[in-house]
Every structure is written in C-alpha cells, then in structure tokens.
Image 1 (spheres, one colour):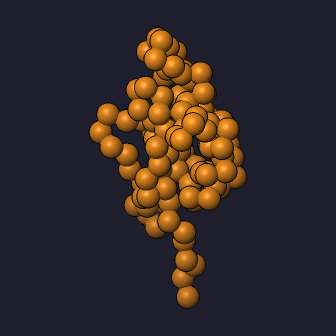
Image 2 (tube, helix red, strand yellow; image 1 turned 120 degrees about the vertical axis):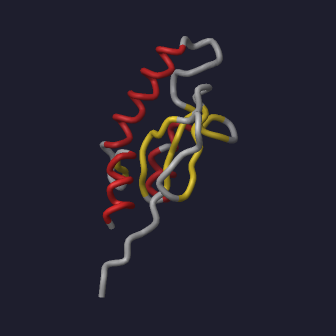
Length: 99
C-alpha cells in the first residue's frame, strides 16, 4: 500500500503585503509565493503574521517602498521554509509533479 500524502497548501503574498492561502501548489497571477505545507503547519507558522481578520507580511505598510516590501517578503520566506512541515514553493512543485 502506498503512503498517503496529505494535501499541500500554498501561502502567497500580494504587493500590499497581504498573505493568502490556497489549497494545492500554485498562486494567482500578480502574487509571490511564500512557501508550501500542510494546512495545519501553515496555520501555526503564520500565527505571528495575523493582522486583524487576515495575515500580512511583517514590516510592510502602504508607505513601505517597493524594494523594502520585497526584502520583507524574502525575510519571511526564509524564516518560514526552516519550520517543520513547511517547504519552499519549488520543493512543493517537485512533490506535486514527481509524487
């Protein structure tokens, strides 16, 4: 019997710093991926990014310069990929495509 893999979810961010999640490996046009992982692992890892009813990249506001937004997203991405149950978006693509 083959091992049952749990579904991966993708966390992605908009240029405004808002973070969203969707089931599967992929993200909408105009967004940037943060990482992939199981839903529960993402929920726990992004708890410190909670911003009211949603999630946001720490350090990003409407007045943040574009380069600083990108750097803040990269810091978040690097921090998240090192957590248990999470992986880079590219590792998620490999797992999806190669099984």
